[in-house]
Length: 160
Image 1: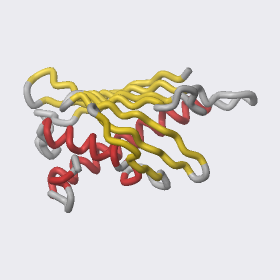
Image 2 (image 1 turned 60 degrees about the vertical axis):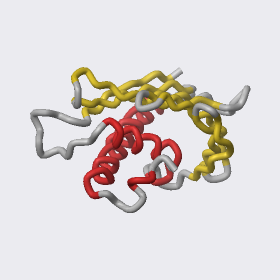
Image 3 (image 1 turned 90 degrees about the horizontal axis):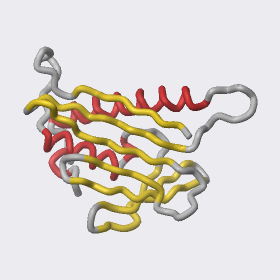
Image 4 (image 1 turned 180 degrees about the vertical axis):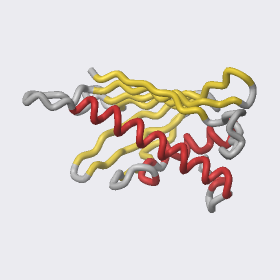
């Protein structure tokens, strides 16, 4: 089982050159990412299959393969994604959590648990996956900062 977590600082009081994001802007951006992951990960297809009381069920498509995910939203706090199927082909779970140790100083903690990609042959696929998660999350936060700063089309309707 691969278990990995990392933290990205959003607002750094000592780095005023980094655009400030409010907790609401950050939350809306993270929800947008959960609903539209293809904007952040090339070649990933996503369709919302069902809205639920606390989130939604989505179908993620990877070429010929697809996974069914349940996404639970804890308002402006946490997004928890896990398989919606009883016996998934691949177990993969993630938590995206907003942390605010002091008012306005935001961080996002990303936690991942998934079936190990390591197999025979001595190739450490899990280390590659960790680096891919880290790079993907950094790129996503960078894009969300740009959305918030520039007010790109649709930025005000991320939650739709």
